[in-house]
Length: 394
Ligand SMILES: [Zn+2]
Image 1: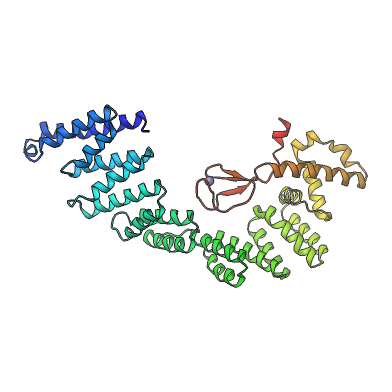
Image 2 (image 1 turned 90 degrees about the vertical axis):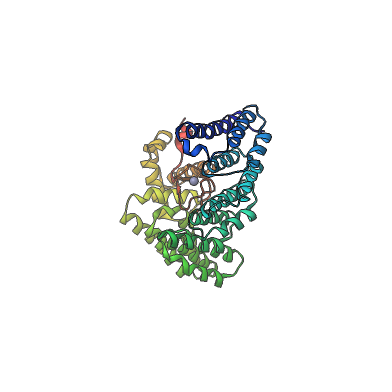
């Protein structure tokens, strides 16, 4: 049911339109002759109908108006937009279809009406119809860019990545700018091919991911997973280490894979050296490594155990929960048992809370994803990478 605000807003629009004529009437005598008084009267009648909440009759009146000129056209667009905003898609569609039936529209006006109708279809969930309209508008002089944007939106939503690549490329060519979107679409195709077991095809798609930094990073992650799947641990190790060198925020995703690859190649000693090198290069990674090790439940590595220990000693909130002094002076056996208990408690806490948050809209999730399902932006999710101990401490 239309809300009260709909009636009032529609009423206001009609008042504006009617006022426009009033000004024209009193201000420009020459124009009076061109203005049929009937239209003015129709608008006043429309206003009355809207104010009396007889929207359907008001709509009919608008649709049957004999003449649509530049001024009334804007009112029609505003009315259609208003209906769409209110979720009254059928009415919005009728307004815009009615406009399109007018032979007097200019090309730009026709394109605007087609675009508005496409938006109505999109709002009504009629994606095929919306897609077909937006496709027809990709050569328009006025709305080609926004039509391509809407096509990209539809293809992303429907996960039609090849079509998304084509539309996004056209959009970027038209605007003379580049984004990482196309690389992500290729990564999506590669992930799908990998999932279907077609690794050769996945590799082909990945060739297109290097054109942006993020695409290259994500591409390397998929390549590493494929190499690991095929038992090529040396290649997987190289790729995973490359990813961490470029962006240590992927530690929780990458560390368990590295740990596993080193274990598979019976090179656990090299894993120890690798972790020591990471820490030696940048001490601030200790917290990241400890977090990833605890979350990933990686046990059996002395280097990781030392990172966890250092993290426990250094965390202010944790220090209020744990008797750090007696932990420091405990026998190695007791210390390792205590650290294991602390790690288990932290892991339960970590796995039960959100681990990634979108920097744009605040959407949070436990699983890493490249495309925010809430605001639809790419690469905006960042790992929180810390245990939310404050919630425990109250
Ligand atoms: Zn978001």
